[in-house]
Length: 163
Image (cartoon, rainbow, N blue to C red; front, side, top):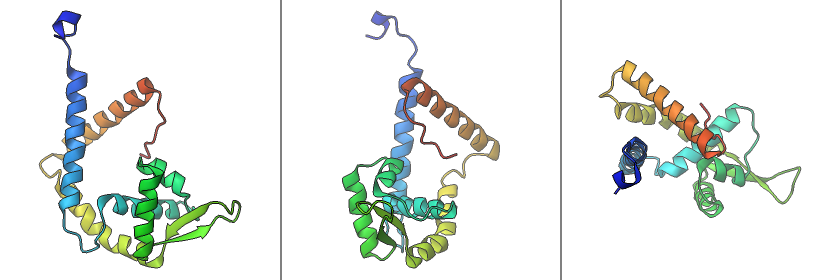
């Protein structure tokens, strides 16, 4: 069918398939990993995001900002934040400049949990790529970054890359 339309190159669709396959596989492996912290991968990423914001001097993050940075709906963020608050891992406070908004920040318990669990988590994630050499990892990172930049340029979407 593609040849009928003069299409002989299918690299783009194959890359799309592989990227989806890799992302889903990563998510599944991480989701199945037993964690004593009892946190889902999305909630773990939220806590990590809050720690990074804190380290950059941000006093709290609006839920809308978290929704955008995590690429999930506002309803999903609300659910995650409610759960994290019930666990005592985050705190909500009214924004002093806009009393209709909340700012979210790590609680002392959340900060301690992330700091204590991160070394093990990073060791686990790094172990997932143990079959690649250092050179291959660098090449893959470079190529994926270039692919991302191409997608941003051609798709005219906002660049969310923090690297």
